Image: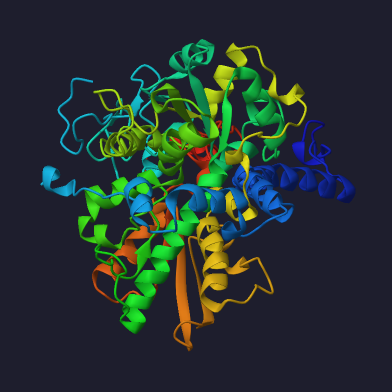
Length: 108
Length: 427
């Protein structure tokens, strides 16, 4: 038996991992993998944030308004009394109604 | 713009939206927001706007991750000059959706309701306030009455009171200029279904230059300069439509003094962004203003008028008034929550008793926003005569006017997708 026989050489496994270390490292890797998912989710949730905030603002304006029905607007009623008469009157038809044009012919 | 345009009449502004070739990265993000497919150009090459298809809604502008689309019409300097002129009454016509967004460029959080501060800042700048919510209430009176007339004609065979014909059901709303132009260029067969009522902006302009000039401002109509302050780029196009010179025609017919050249009902349109620029130019910090009152007859508005800026708002306001007019009884619950929210197509059925005919009727309504994604099935149904609805509200922009093309661009908003998608060549 030679002194240099490799079968008698004991080399400790250079990569040794305790159970605790394995779980800790695994947890970090999973957390890193989850980050993009969280980012995409939050982006999806916040996508409409400004739309929802502005919508809420207008409904709040409605909820706090003293008068909430168009036909109870005194200024509108005054306009009809002093000037336009009533909805769809000749004055209303002339000033408050319009016509549309067919623009498709030009395209074809 | 020396491009040949086919879908514009003389006097109309073609191509409100254009793309700055230097900024465009060819990422195709805008195409995902364009309701008419008006943006041309291959992926990776500079994109262009086909003005004949474009309905000027500005969704590409607020959603471009690189800020390449821009407005070709900038009336800020012109309005500033008019404000400085003491002989001109500058009427600021403020749309509902502006009051929840104008705070953003002044550092306030999204959705802050700043009506009072806005009145104060605008009065300081020299505007006379005409709240477009007032005109929205007026629109409900006209459009709602028109709907009641159409419905009674269709259901009970009622004849028109005056000479004009009665349009068919379903009635479409006509407040959204992008939607109106969409119908005119894509579905002209539906023109009779559009409500004949003008949009609130145009009503406001016509009223300000006739009744307003004579009885509220006490000035000559030609010295009234009307400025629409809108969350919308398509309103700039709408104001340039040649039929919207009705105040001039009206004044002339009534024998009033009118200059030989017709003046438009709306002289200039500022978007919310434009107003913020104008105020900043005049060194007015809106966020630091105290709340003020509107101060004119035209600043009086109701809750029904203010929700016009939300998808479903026009319908809700119309239902509130139609209910009371048709049944003669007050509403037990003012909110119609079925038409609120961000669902693509919302529908509701309201059963009520028409006191004039003593019969129960069920009014079926639908609310559509985000034309690009949601309108085709609805209009195809109407064209085929299979539509179950009587009244359909349409707004082009997702969420309604509050997310309009003229609103402040929100970095955390819907443009997020534009920043992600360019990395994928297949999208």
